[in-house]
Length: 289
Length: 336
Image (cartoon, rainbow over all chains, first blue to last red; front, side, top):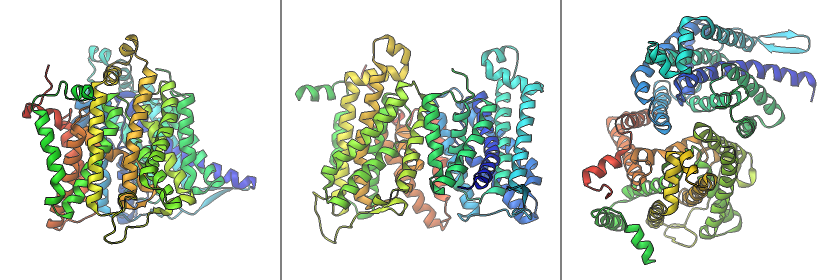
């Protein structure tokens, strides 16, 4: 197999992986703080994808341009979801939370199906087929832009949790629930803000994914699963882990598509997950509980 | 034998036995009364009651959340169907191969997960991963049809051959009814036996159970092995009832979720929960179909949206499931 082909595919995989990483980052942040596993994560991304698709179809707006409004919309959605439905479930057993989010996921997927029908939709931006030449290597422009944006948003989120007062308060609520209550933090509001932030991440990732793949309502479960695999590989609750896990999965998917039949590529992903769960169940960047 | 019977009746509330007998009698005469449409729904209800009962052993009794039970259904279905299609082996024999395949898969998953102390969300994800891995593997395995599917020869009209499970829906109804009844009896036996108490102990508090001398690894293994072995025959039934198998369908995560909804809605860890949940969900889905068709709202997805909303309401307002609330109403609470 020619080396430059492998390299081209590998670069594409890494760039896609960064967008995966942003999506998984949302899941990881939510779990790390609220301790809720968002089983409707991929479904929420699909909602954002349709928002981007509609903006492009009706007003010819570039998905990169609507990224912030869509992320803001998803923030409100996540905030509302946490305050209205999820907060009462925080003390319930795991399977009960799981059922709640599965119900939300079912309603979301099929709501989209009702609204938009089963057919795939695409966002064909004018520069969709352009690429940048680097010697023998060809890098897709959209993929590069998407990966760059994902990286910038992730960096912003890191900075928020590191330096902002609200970020510090959220970390406090995650570290010590009772302690946070004692010092007078409104933990329920912080949880809602966190769920909102996680949703905003996945909303931004949805806009970026919309330029990379065809959009159908049934993508939701597939990407929920992918987000899980990434955060488990990276370490549930670790932000760095989610990003690195995303890159790893993106890369292994791309290379597996080259070596095996493309339809068998997620077998490698799941094999990787099984390996990580067995050898290092806390994930690559996770701390042992 | 009498000891068994005595233990099974043991602490059951006095009104439970006559009610159970009445339910069984009603189910036995059902095909004589209803038309083929209702019969097909009844088959579906009993199918979900059966698999729900099998899954309930793992989650309801032993507290291990498996989200990959479609793996055992699929392996059971494929094992028996391949033997039938390629070698003409009867499903009653093929069922042993089906159970063997499911047990082998469960042994691998259980040994890996429980040896390394993987539990909760992580365990659930591991079970999904194995099911998805198998699904994609079967998609690329041409001898068993690959993604194009595996088809069983359909019975000729009027033909009824019990040994090969080729026949009219009534035959399948009685097969699944006896399976569901046996699963119920088996779960009752497990529940009142020593193993049932061990399971519930480790479900409630693993450390405390270990301190009492319960071999955690061994009893978790027994839970996954028994549960998978019970799930596999459901796959055999599925294969011979529907006659078509696609890896995409039978191993999909949606199947796994579908089969756990019943016991969770009905009441986790109870014997009637899986049955009641299967009944409520299946009938609800059918009624929604009818109502939406009558209103002319046959948009794809509309039914599932209502289904999801109903689920949401039950999860929010009946966290223990329907059965515990209903049992209190009927005066069927356990004697203390």
